[in-house]
Image (tube, rainbow, N blue to C red; front, side):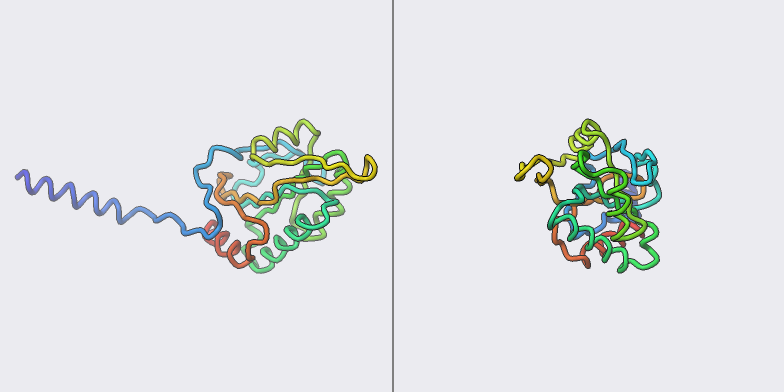
Length: 193
């Protein structure tokens, strides 16, 4: 009787293991379970206050940059545009957020002119310097002002990676700058399925 009971327990354990869905095999850096990047309170380029909850039901890609960035920001935004084109109809289930790390110059109007050029569905987010600092801290994003020839011609050093959140608003992936679009699309499709 003891052997039969032990066999039944093993069989149940094996069956339970078979019914569990295996973890997705992401090609990007998997951040599943990370304890940072939980929420933000910023304003979009249309003047609407936004938090992560506004995008529940969509996969979110969040990139931190600034409009006067000469290289990595426009390149990353162009890559995001290509990702959306490659996703086809599934792109409607993805929200790209461009968060400025330069609230001094990146006004609502400037973000409204810059961000939709890459895709009309993209949203630019901004806040006060204090709000920007709080979001940077929450998302472990580093940024700092690099003085230029005059006070208005400075540049910004900043973290250049993007974060991906699942449909429940949980952080899942880190996309490195220059990562092939095909890899990001593959990972997004896993999150969309």
